Image 1: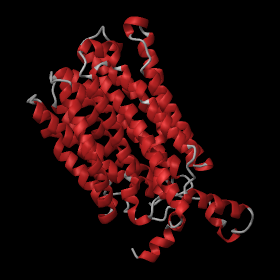
Image 2: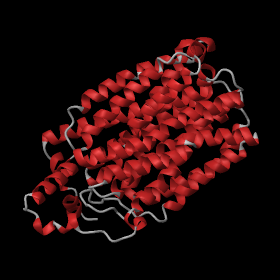
Image 3: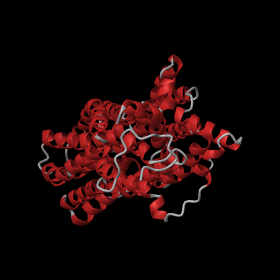
Image 4: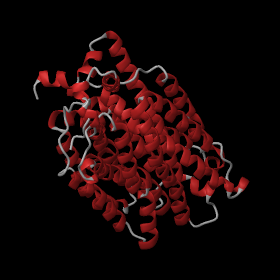
Length: 461
């Protein structure tokens, strides 16, 4: 692709960046998106860690360890049920009214619900109301999160210059990694206390403290300018309504006679790509913690330390993956990551059985670097470029969240059920590999989108 083509394609984003004010707006937008995604993943990493480590004792104390783990991850999955509802509601709002207003609302919803989770009395105090309250707050948390990740990704993608869109959009992945790092770091400190103290009250500290991130992100987002791509699209619609772009009216009023599947190919491509990333990610980062602690009897500090180390490595892995996608293309890099996850699945779960702290920790680190970090660093720009400007937020958010439900949302629950039924690691490994395979196969049907004009009204395929 030549330079003139790049400049022509993304004149809105690059024209703004050429001004001092535009550069400041870009930095502010990047900071707000990073903080917001950090908040989202603090929420979900805190919950994933707590579900594997203490929620069984706090909210489900009267059942066996295996059933308690299953119950904890059942409430974990509730958040994913709420996410597509939030994706539709806020996605449509974001496509009509702008990215900014949605991102302010979603971060507030997530921050409030996460903080309140830390205030729920235990089962021993209020009985069945404790897990019910947990489910309700988890639902609200998921409702806000359903549009947070996609909205922040869209905002960064629409702010970024074409040549570096993969690298810039990977800031979203760095945000998710930051959230995991904060959550695991706080949990490491909490776990220094004795187990009874953790169960009694110390588990609440990370949830309540997360309010600081939510407040900071909300304040910054209130002063972020709308994306240049959305502003240009709105200006063109306004001119069209005033009759100044009559020659382009067909672009807005032409009836699409294609079938439902043909009109939504990009949506289904994003769905498949999301399954290949999100399912393995939540098994590598969520379920495995409860598995090695509750079932294999490994010390709680081993998986928590591994998550912390992987999160540190993520600050290198994520932008590197984004840079690779800028250099070699989104599709081939995504395919390679999915293939590596397919190779990883069976050896990983087989060697977890050694219960050796070094081996267990290494397996978790490698799994997170592949699924939770590397592949996610590519997905950000890929998702933005797959969709046209008029419905980008809605389609991307819904595809991501539906993909999240059928993969990451139910992955810990399915894995726990498989473990309870078969009593062995091999069905979980097969399940892990199958989801990675879906992502791998999807790349053969996906278009290459690197350098695409984000003001195009049509999807990339």
